[in-house]
Length: 203
Length: 181
Image (cartoon, rainbow over all chains, first blue to last red):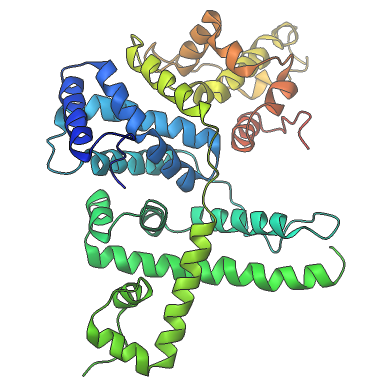
């Protein structure tokens, strides 16, 4: 998942094109860097969205991550995959962004939002999803980063450990705690809150 | 002797991995099985709650913006990050400048907001002055494009995201709410 070769290209050709783009970018060729942006923008943007849970911030921070990557690309030695390196920059950009901007001190919603008439199943699913996404953003930083990289980006424990500068054991432990926390705070809460809200009236 | 598997091993088991010993334990231990089932269910639920996919055209705009900022002579923070200081600086200027006629009327005259400001504060240097960059951006017209069409503070605030608006409100100490519900 860390490399996303364009259709038709063989893995090798894609890797070669990427290597050439990295070398050219290191010589200051911004057009070559554009290839890297094209290849990783989706992964980076979506990582940021999952982390920050809104489009505007995800867009700003994902762009910032690429600008930082370009500035730092001279230091990229190729001991890890470019994607690993890029994702680490993106995670750091998300962390910095959140540290700079205190997140709104919201409480977890107590139940599903009022939709008037009985909600369709689809709506309910969407609401539940947004509940889960909001809860993900409230996880402790390490747990959140681990969960996002592991679950949504389909990376191996080893890759996640490399991105986060951590060990496989720690990644698994963080994933365990992230899932346990989510289970406790959201999945259970939403299920128990949804039932009475639907049966009785609204508050 | 072998007790319940550690958290890391439960993750392995939930992912269908895990060594023989752990699997044997799982087969024999109902409480670990329940825990692994919960982990799996939560994993599925989290996976299903993925972020929405932007429209395909978005990626072109994203690339173009990154390229533009890379080629720009001097990188500057993106529009939204200085929007709040921009509006705050404008309003602060208004607060400071407008009350002066009253302030100069002599003793006994009401000195509204400006009176609470210290008599003298050092001016920031050019490098430190965030407001300067903001004013320059406004002068070049960039900022207006990002603000859109708004005629006053409340309208501009209505166009901001929730957190920007909160930043604005805390800068003023008063709600800056526009037509936002």
